Image 1 (cartoon, rainbow, N blue to C red):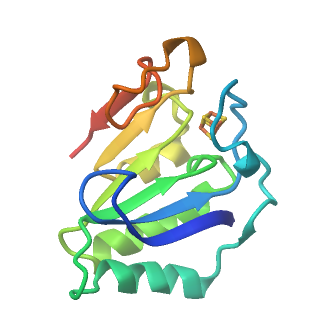
Image 2 (image 1 turned 180 degrees about the vertical axis):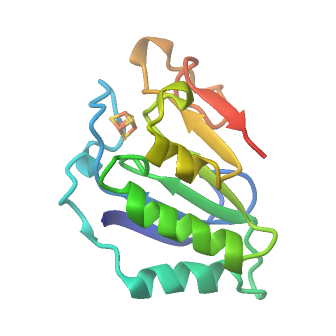
Length: 154
Ligand code: SF4
């Protein structure tokens, strides 16, 4: 998996202070996408074991408490990202007690493959659906367009 950005401290992409990872790769091609540079799977840089370890360490940093991890992109549920994202969310669940996981995807919760669902079973909140320019509304919280849904899963 490749990633575009990792922010160890982020207060914009989800509630509270968070660690946020923007992965590479998205098939949805939404007109008006704010993050077109992330569409290609091979854009950005390789996500390494060291980066994964750093995220776990940052989430457990007691000097700057984080509420949790945000996964965005690109699309964390792109089929080619799913194995690495699954490994990461399993580690967060096992090693970062009390931290939540929020994820943005262009797929619909109702249409996930079993492999994508295995990831979603381990996260707390999924914001799903493509960005639809005609339904865009800056007043929406955590969503770019009103067709998207904030699913509080657990
Ligand atoms: S799902 Fe998100 S990243 Fe992908 S094209 Fe749509 S707005 Fe852009």
